[in-house]
Image (cartoon, rainbow, N blue to C red; front, side, top):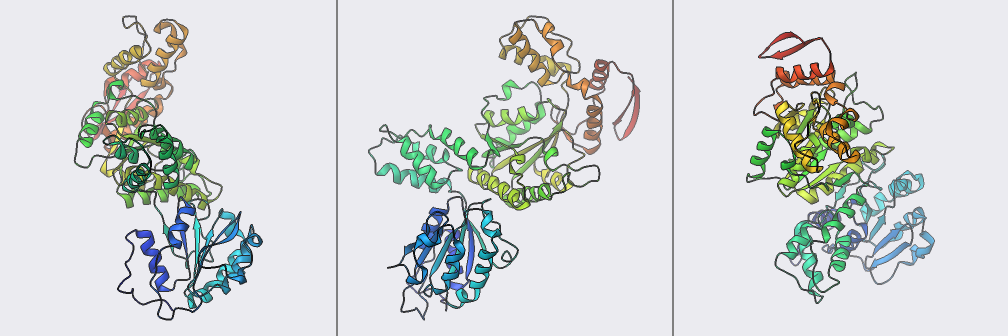
Length: 537
């Protein structure tokens, strides 16, 4: 029977996962699942986690045995492998054989299963064998421990999900990384400059301890700790581990490269000067295409994947206290550009999330993939994360998502005014090495992206801006109807103006410019000051 209390000499572990594991062992719980980014490290740690002896400790000492798909079972802790289990080679690629023999393990023993993939749980033989061990394991204080990577076997089948407790191992903290770096360099003749350990630890966030330790070893090959080089290793490791769902921002643009958007820039300045300034910026591009609703008001796909993704997104934002802001407006108005510039302007890492990369063929796969993304975000930014979602269509976004934006607001990025466009021309002409005194083309209907494209085309063709202009689309003209509708929506719903401080108000001049550029004559309803007016353009 399990011990009812710890002996005086026994000390509970401080690590939350190991502490919970000790509770599972002491309570006689027959099984658990541990989701971890590094199964081998976790198995090694849990197998050696001390548990107080039960009063009726058996004469035959318990053992710890681990199984993997490639090697079969092997002895981790104990004097010898129980003969009843047979050889490890016999159970390689045959987990059900070991599960059937597990009932013969000594009292108090541990059996670790390194779950290779979600296919493990689709085997009726394996699931039936697991269910069959419950009573025997509980009666003898044995424990069956399933260890799986997020998204690769940590989704239990219906027969077990209500009964098996799940422990989740977070990626190593900055403090854990710093200790590992100190331990690694201590055993090597390596020169360490002041602050190198701190820099190295920050540049290793989001990686497993094993991968980070190998990276540090490589960074110490030439007699000193090259802490700065670890940043590129971090980027490659994080992007690979998340299947490309997370991408590090690689542009060097700052707000000096952005024309206008004064109110949003001022807000960012105040936020990052505050006492709880974010440590990480996360951009979610075109979130309306990821979780947006269709004409019926439900999430567009009927597979359940987008619904599950939305649930995971909302839960993680709420549980971790992330700041969420929504940037809406027409394409090319500077929404994504602003997030890139924001991170670089305040020396913060910026990550772009591609939730489409999280969409697997099954709901469980998608939820596991997005959880892996959020686990990485937590390792990189802790609870001080600013998440900025961009959207071209706000009317499709679910209200439960918009309600989470209360901390940072919903910002409307209008098509740029004449003054803004003039500043954007100055920036882009300088960036592309163009003659600043040359004549500029008629830019009514252009947004920032159009101006950048015109400058790029002039540079590539070696021609004037006027000659390059016909090759450049005018987004404000092509998307006039959508732009007008979005302006009316932004004013009526009180979205924040990215250019002028306060709620957005439709500017008649801008509206007239768009219509003039399109060469159209139509009636446009402009909602202003609580009432409506109809103007002939």
